[in-house]
Image 1 (cartoon, rainbow, N blue to C red):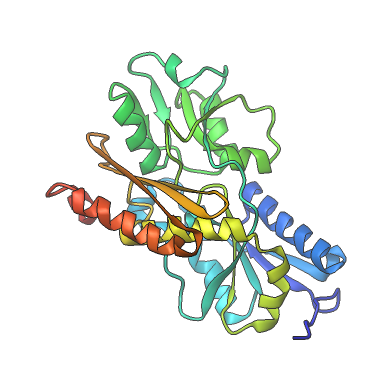
Image 2: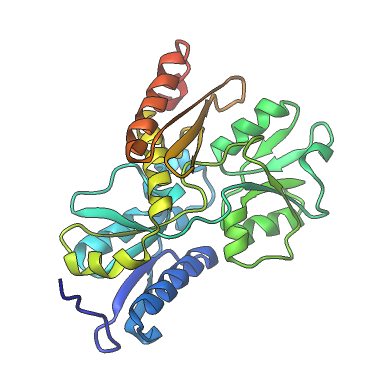
Length: 316
């Protein structure tokens, strides 16, 4: 099909949250589209949209609505035509999109690991007994308490810069951040210890950027096709199917990571009680074409292994 390219007179409107990391991701998307179609920067307009998750910082996400808090207003603008595409951190995305929208494009994935961050660069094993660690992630909280039940975990909401300031203010001795975010922000000055995925599995889709569009917008589909990273797409298909099988959200301590070989995909998954008192893990492999089926099957296996009452807290 003939693709109608955006222009300075009619720019492609890119919707995003307004945090420095979200803007860096939108800028990366714009740069890739510019290179793919040989377009000037002013053929694109970045539109900042403030979401409920950005506005309410004094309460845990589970108390105010979960993952949709970071996407709802952006998706409303996408459906109304106020923007043409939306750029998301895929770990923030619910497993189902609103009718009329589709996640059609994934950019090459960054470092998937969590980073353990302290002001002095200390390693996780250096934390003294009873130390205070800050995180807003139920997954990180649960994984931390599985390994160190002596630690005290406090709520740490906000963007990367806000959480680093809380460390400087002495709210906690340490925190966890995604390596991907630190890399995309080029924050080389932040002292961190990357945690290998063999020690702590990351959040589902961590390090991946997804681009959402209206499902009937074939021109935008054609614009995005050259920048879609197929390998990342396969990995996300497996991980998000795993999350969907477990009915996962921001209220669910779930971790998962898919990795590719030449012909197959391997998926590791974990689900935990929020207090770190119990953790279930499993893994599996399948041909790449069966990535989503692999994720669904792994999720079902963990559900079948969960003892009575394991998921009761999700409805609490």
